[in-house]
Length: 585
Image 1: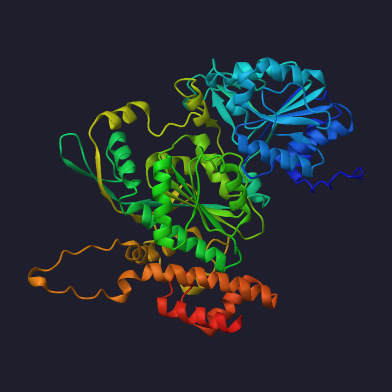
Image 2: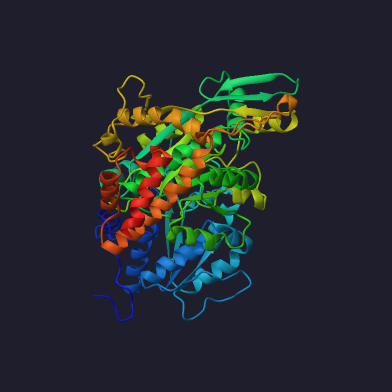
């Protein structure tokens, strides 16, 4: 029974109970160090707080210290701890001495610990403490934080380490408080492999319904750029001959001035429309950019293609954490960000991710994809739209095998690079070459390449067209096969290309002739986007007023105004559906 004034704890999942039982195994001594590897979205925070509550209630510890990677996660941890009946202070700085007496502990960051390890040592040893190290891979010695973490918490009573992905490391880059074994695999090159005390992988979580199944939709296209010799080079993302050519084709595809980004944004927009029409009425999409300049440009593209202004979250914005929380609770469809919504940030309604970045590390890939796989209800699925380049296709395939991940350290230990978490846009030689040589992106086109499933590339080209009825089941596991999903995406690709085509500004004809008025269809994508947005809002009003599920309202609407789903319906059909909904309000 919960103590008076303590919030009722949420029921634990089977894996969380199993991890607790192993921790408190009566046949062995309770561990001073315990490493849990659980796939992103599985509930590591809930497990950690359940363990902390039990240790506090049984007076095994008197204080809880949480070390998180970012400032935003400090607040998220403190709010989750409050719901578990544990008051943690997320505002303490290194300028403050002791922990407030009305707090059970505090939440800090790895950077703060590195700034004053002896202060945190004093806090962690003043009382019997449990130190929770979230995403422990950030404490790698190669990041300079490892020594500080060991100095600060080496004498703490108990330590719980958490990570979303298993990892390997080199023999001279051990992470404190982690057990290792010799790794004789080919890719380890004589390194070490971490050994978790409890592991809960993506496949386990998928089988338990804890996470959503994810579909990787790869998009190719031809990129054209001018090199330092003034020559125009053209290469396909999927057919690049060398790594350097592939990197430049990839970089050109992500240029906001080309057509690749709008095309993929439109594809994700249609996917979100479908999800919202079929049960997931608040589905959201994340657009992941490499830097702030691209993020701002992508936000304009999202608004142009969808007719809706997205949330824009940048790391140097003092209100970034607040904006993340507001987006998580809102009905806004798109958010464009640079790394802010990656590791540990909880936006359960996010179901689509557009990979508009050159980041290629396995850890970042797994963490970013983890933002869209958190399951809330049976039947939900996630879709990741990504460039069809070998590094990303390999990472997507590796997620299916739930393999251990390599975590390369950054080349130096400056504060800026530490904050980047070792993420490199391109391998150093290629990046330097790209910066020093004259390079000019000219254009990039996009087209659907394939869906990844079971390590195979499914194009859908050899399958018959998908019917409207089959479209209604897109993404529901077991009801539409990966092959049919690929066929549907390929089928819709030509329409998306029309929708995102940029209007060509024609010069004034000779002789002063007045150019003909453009056909109405030339600009219908914008009108259609606004109508879809209006329809979605009206569906919400009808559903609320008549106590009907959103899906039932959409079904009634499709019966009253026949035609394809809104994502592919004509402007005329959309207008008639809008008018019908107005008559129902």
